[in-house]
Each structure stands twice: as structure tokens, then as C-alpha cells.
Image 1 (cartoon, rainbow, N blue to C red):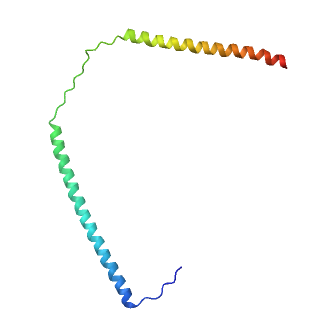
Image 2: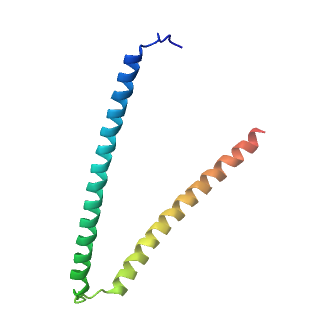
Image 3: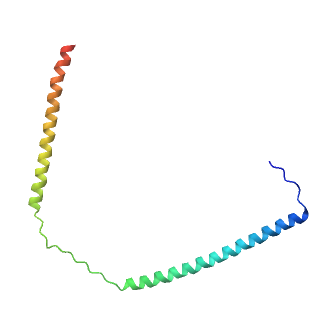
Length: 112
């Protein structure tokens, strides 16, 4: 804990005055900021009311272009073909793995 030498009465009074003036300056800044905040809040609310009034009378029409014909049978046939290719490839991999495992297993039994 640092040692603070005693201050004279005049120094203490000056520090109190400076602190009081600083506090008042900060309070004034807070008041200005609050006034700005209230102004912008009321401006925002007015703007929002005007936009809502404009949008209230607006109607929207959505049209869809369904002129393209989807050939679902062809799409399903393509998906089925891809699935069958993947299935065949997986089946071959599984069979190869199984055959490899069967070839390795008898060798390990012979070593025992």
C-alpha cells in the first residue's frame, strides 16, 4: 500500500471542486445523449408507422411458371440405375472382402 502524504486543505478543496465539475460535465453529456436517444427513438417509430401504412395497402401477386414438363418416370429410372450401380459395386467389394477373409482364415488355422 503506497504512502500518501497528507494534503493541505486547499489541495483537498481543489480536488473536490475538480471532481464535482467533472461529475457535472458527465451528467450533462448523459443528458444530451438521452435527448438524442429519445429523438432517434421517436423518429424511428414515426418512420415505422409510415412504412407500415405504405405496406398495408400493397398487394402482391405471385405467378409460377410451370411450363416445363418434368418426366418423373425418366428421373426415377435414372435414380434406380444409379442405385443399382452403387449396389453392384458395394456387393463386389463385400464379396472381395469376404473371399480375402476366407483365404486368410485357413492359413491362420494351419499355423496353430
